[in-house]
Image (cartoon, rainbow, N blue to C red; front, side, top):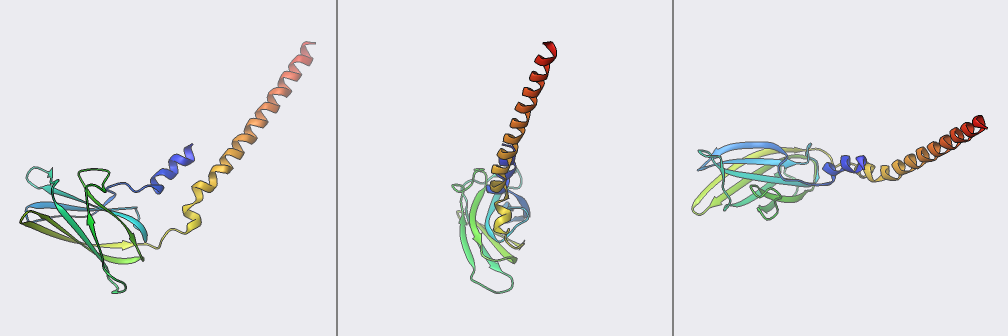
Length: 172
């Protein structure tokens, strides 16, 4: 059970993560979060929080688009809409996407509410993807844990039998 709990953060993508940038632009404070930490090529979660800076109140009726471009110029741009529907934390706008390669990525976040618009930029550095065997270590460990528990159980049963047998021989 403990192994499964330890695996949970690595197996899920939650909203939020580490703050990559938080800036005032136009009428809002826009904060970009990324997950997992460290950021790696493969499935990632980019989340945006849009707030009114004077009250820190979240703006819940925005349209948020993210554009990612590899800074080495290789590959196509990735354009995705971040939505509250995709977010677990409904104060954020989230986009789940597959980052195709490691390296430096330029992220442009465009926010629009009615006629008001704002934009922030950030540079993300993505490490190489996790090797497949390393990402499966928790699942591979589960049978080993059960085998160890079984061996401990059998050892305790035998020890208890020997103790009860020795006790009955001494009383006789």
